[in-house]
Image (cartoon, rainbow, N blue to C red; front, side, top):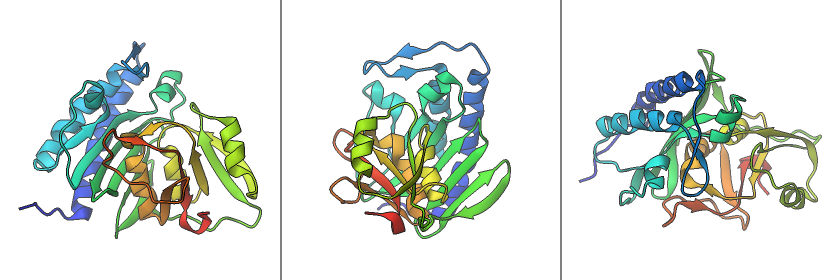
Amino acid sequence: MTQRYEPSALLDALLPVARAAGDEIMKIYATDFAVRGKTDASPVTEADERAEALILPALARLSPDIPVVSEEEAAAGRIPAVGERFWLVDPLDGTKEFISRNGEFTVNIALIEHGAPMLGVVFAPALDRLFAGAAGIGATVEDKGVRRTIACRTPPAEGLTVVASRSHGDAEALAAFLAGRKVASQTNAGSSLKLCLVAAGEADVYPRLGRTMEWDIAAGDAVLRAAGGIVRTLDGTTLRYGKADFANPHFAAWGTTAAA
């Protein structure tokens, strides 16, 4: 029999876990850390590994019956069998932002149920911004200790605010995606913060026209959906999780009222 978890209690329990992982990351951020390459040539640091080493046992204590798919474990070939419910963890999303020391990196923890992100936490430790959300509960952001509710906005008459990837942009593909749409401004951001900016009504759409993995975006997607938004593939279908290779197709994250 599957154990039941109360979403708001589970979400509250995740907040100190994300903050503690952020503390570990910031300890490394303050040093002259080394950067190594993984088998897929993406960078990894001790901060990724220390954050993951803190998160995994915390989730095992919190929900021993729910398997965890985590980026660094997956990179090492350790991927558990998953069913209808599992955790997706990226202990340090935006490693390139971490290496360039621009502060736009996050801790991502999400719970997937039946292919959808049901709750998630995104913590940007260098910015001290903590986003959280769960289906049926709503979404919040905690800025430097002050928590407030967030929601997607109706795009203003002057047009869309577009947020694009800082480190993985494809200008030509983005221009093609935006062709025919009324755009007021475009900004760049790193990591899953882009999804959270749409959730907070600070942007209207985040097109991702390049490769991502499920753990990169699941927590931000959970916050976005809790705030009234949606992530759709380019053919208009809602993005699903638990794919065989955990790789995402190209997608766009919208505030629902902006979705097209």
